[in-house]
Image (cartoon, rainbow, N blue to C red; front, top):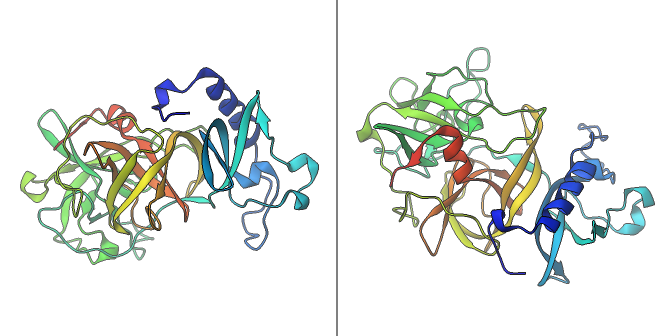
Length: 335
């Protein structure tokens, strides 16, 4: 099965994937969140994502299309009761069970002050009283525009505190966890966010902050990515080589593993469902880790952006399709 963008996925694969989502992923969780030393074998607890790709057999990628079932822990069938064993086929389509660990919105580590600030560097908000003793930071994803106004693009959970921050709140570079100074380091103000929902599926985790002074920012991505070669986002395709710069792990390279996954991520709001997501696997080591949320994902060959990183597990990273993000916010990339 050759790689193809999400809008070219065959109807049989889409239908099989949706059945897996409805029957397995969207069911109520039964495991207690506090029992961190136990692993539930129930599909509603262990399955954290459903996607589409080529089946992997004995470590080799085949040309057989399949529905992928992403699980926290892949267990020996002898340890699982018959009623909890995942199906080998769904509507005649093969399945593949892949261990990813639990997906989480990725939190921060330290990075330094930059002027002008640019994509890949640290930024964040200040938590209000009585939580003002907690410090955070995330990643400046990209510079975007609406008409003549420029904005910083990142995640809702990086700029808007998962729907909680009032519009107009200051955004600091670096984030306060990275020794940003609230008195001097405000470079933007929260202008818009797409609300995150704990009750209905999400497609994006994104927000924008209006830049206070155009001279405080630049569009060129930090480190080895550099200037984007196109203001138009491209479609993610399985096997595509990608790269990113984030404040957690800096520059990393990876490959697109899935371009239409439905996944569950752990947020402060709870376990949030995201549909039609990109999954990325690092080329050597992790592609992203704590602090990288908000980074844009760029194809190596074309130099065009395709995703907005929102979180991940120790082995897989999750990104929104950038075209969906820009459409929801009504903005365009600045290059």
